[in-house]
Length: 121
Image 1 (cartoon, rainbow, N blue to C red):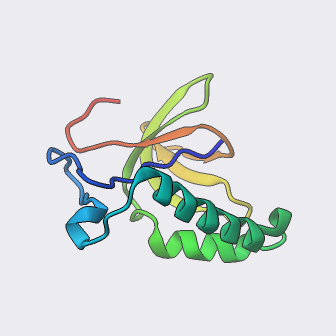
Image 2: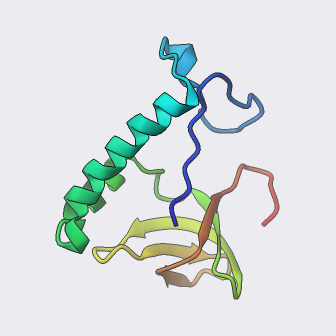
């Protein structure tokens, strides 16, 4: 499963991280048109992925665009919720984080939530 959020016409103002919406940058799209654009982009990255053969390119692109090392996050694996700090994305795709007890954790599944400063995990 892949979760994606794209702000077309509005974005929340109370976030403690940068947020915007496409209309603020002169891009006006109806949801159906955005879905068509997203489908094309997803197909591109699935082609790059090539059933895992191209993962190194995916990892490089993610590392160039993803959040910074040390970013606070929570991962819900379904069995436990682990709060801590982002460290890296491993060569095999595992999320590497430092948990609240100072232990390095290597996670291969779970729902990741980036926490705002002051939120409790």
